[in-house]
Length: 146
Image (cartoon, rainbow, N blue to C red; front, side, top):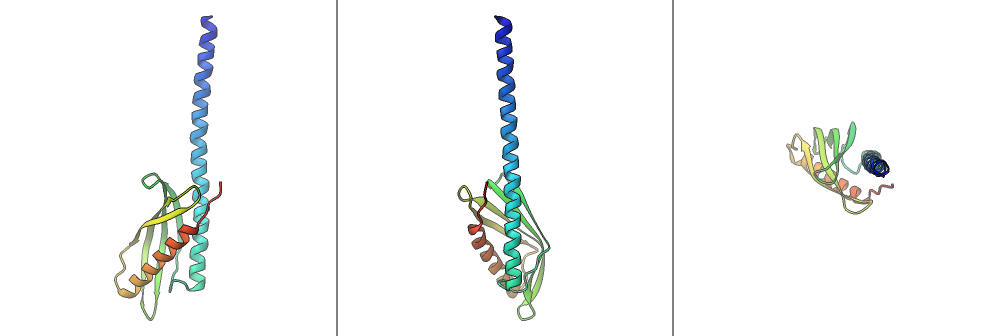
């Protein structure tokens, strides 16, 4: 009898451990898939803004999207951002960062925008503000699928 209960106990412990590991892996896989979908959608939005002239002189090189447990969402970095025109002035930024926090199961809210370095003149500052507003609007429309 002792041998049977010991085997049952070992099986229960193994099943619990395996279930916990599988659940943890599934969560990481889901986060990675969501990050990839977000990156693609942000790249599309930026390309549309660049080609359509929605934000004067907008150019960028690379986007990264990483899970961020501080906001229960994702940290976004856009590298080598360029803004401006000859009329209003130009400025380049090493990076633009912001967070996407989940507003519901499949939508996001953008917040905590930061440009490095800070805009130095009115033209680039106004263009940066326009870019931030457009990204906030676009983030609200982003929808991820499981």
